[in-house]
Image 1: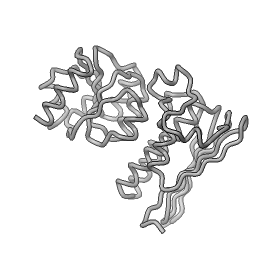
Image 2: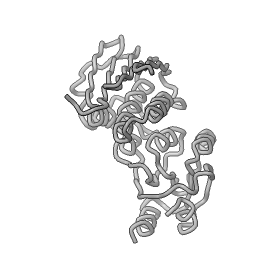
Image 3: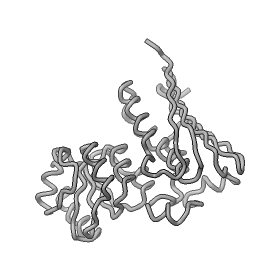
Length: 111
Length: 144
């Protein structure tokens, strides 16, 4: 499954990093603590969070994550979107909350 | 071919927009050197946490990277408040980060434990009101 498939099936907004929409998705990780993601997420996962600052992209890039989903209509800060474009790691958005979007992504990947 | 390489990066205390830059450069170098991906992953976690600690706590710092055929050594030397009690700082959940830093999702007291889990060798020395030196060693071959 690619990030583009996830965007389509879960009706997500694409804020930035469009050139990474063909990245393969292997799973997901949900956390707003950056060290938790740093320590425990794995490459190819989609990270669900409400953090919108640029360090999110530093972590997404260092961990080779597939994409980031921002919950409850959060939008990436300008320099976050900029780095997302540079790295080709999409930042996506949903109006759903963390619980709801996580459940949907889980079903999509493991269903 | 040179079998010893040396790199240096400056880290600016308080500048979170650049946090992770040095770690990202180090990751690129290790990838170019065809270092085993599992070792790169662990190096990245340990180095990023150490770099963020300099940004979050110190005034300035320098990262010295030395790579030879045996190991990658990453030494982070900062000028800053230092760590009064290193054992306490190593405890999971212990943090002295500001509320501003915590709101960004840092300062959960997971940084040093992450470094310890991922580094093959971790050495920390610190002097209060002077600064802290962290040395991360990653062995490139079988240990021992």
